[in-house]
Length: 272
Image (tube, rainbow, N blue to C red):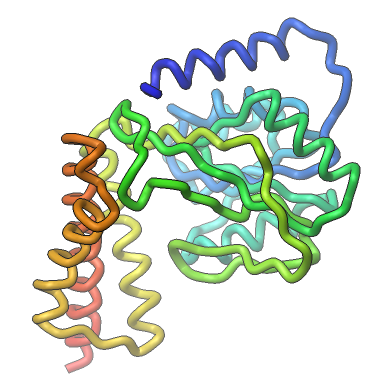
């Protein structure tokens, strides 16, 4: 499904909400991490208007992110991001409700997703839920590669788990876990330059994390790991079936592997 069709579906959802009497509020907190997201945050928050509490953890944005978030009624905390898990855990510690939903600024939900969250939090049978994320890349819905069937744990009781990992973080929840039937729509990186900038940012954090764990890297790994990454994503995970978009995505994820290991090598050798 092209990005435009996905956005039209979301617009219909928010249009229904704006034209109706608010008949319920979801008893859950939403936590969003931001850094210069003024192009996305307003629309993201529009789809979350029926949640009783929205917390924005901002990494000292230099654009209008904080201003827009406050105009939409969000509670904003400014905190330097050194680790994505630490930032998420800090946001979760500020939440007022038992249930917490984590959404990124370039992710969106519709009214069916919201209604399902309202239902499962009232039933209170499970402690957490995996959510399927539908990813787009440069305007195209991706069906293969590492963006196929992405399930992430994003809704859980805040006292049941903790986020771990500086980047590519995961929410470790101790309890009964199930899956939601509705999806999160992810519309990131509208240009290649945006994607490269984000990958460069992530590679720096990831390299520091590996360095602090005393992980070493060799010349051979720097050269061949990115190559194997491309082969894995493009051929083994059928990224080629996504056409040119699949090729570009596999290339850029290989670049991320190269940038991470190169940075790690430089960090390790800076000690000498």
